[in-house]
Length: 425
Image (cartoon, rainbow, N blue to C red; front, top):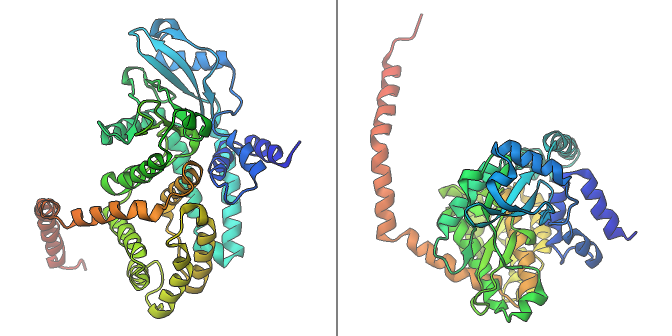
């Protein structure tokens, strides 16, 4: 048995949280040996299924109806089986082709055990390593605990899918399948069946003469659109969840499924991220350093000139190179070396965004190695920055602030009343 097979089987045996860790690693072929990366790809939709009759019983219990009363056809053999749920093809009585997703039975106690081990490891790391403390590993595990338990609620996934579908309604970039709400329950999700090529099916994409450059660029645009226009992004974008439409391969369109994990940013997070990226694109390292200090990511007493020089040393080599020549994994390691010198802290609230960025990089490397991620993203970011200061946006912000005035006035009045009361003796 090869080392890749042993590693994959070990992750499967350790449970769903570790399987998802393997899914993330599978996108990082620049950091992993090829044999291990190939094996980890199998984690994405080829985890052994659970018993078909158990699945049918669970579905019927959730729907409160027999399978034959809801579906004119139900395929007992699952289409795919992943760490949290498995999927069966079916056809509704009304004629729509759908997929039925059902959560694995007995998953909560298993996840609880996995999380307990992760918390032990995280606390140990914080105790013995100053570098680990900068990464807030316990807080990261706490954030992931909420995320993984949310993923067990398929009504939440259905709502996320509906939101993402609405955000990209009529878009040429991304299609999200329709949710059939009448047949959705906490442990069962029924949605439109989609047909497309998996994003890693390079042979299939080549056979239909897909414009790979446009496909890669559109992936970057989708990411930035979700982050900056919508502040709502699909945060589980491993290859098993992303397909490419077979219609119009010269203008390829993505299809996204499995919206169990999503992320969002506050306006402050958006603004901070945008200004940092914009400064990076402009190679304004002094601005980057100042933004880090202003935000509190590094201590206020940090020497600006020294921090600027350190950032320049890390970032300057990445520019004017195609994506295939840049290892963001190496850049992250060098940035972490800088963090040790300046006590820069990784913000736990951006962990999902960081994970999504890693996935985007991994996919970009496979789709179109010549893609220059920075050149593709910069025009979009510049346009977003201009729109932020447009009269329409400023007017909307002013209107929002005006709407808050009665609330602020009420709070002020209450505060003054409390201050004017005599202290109790």
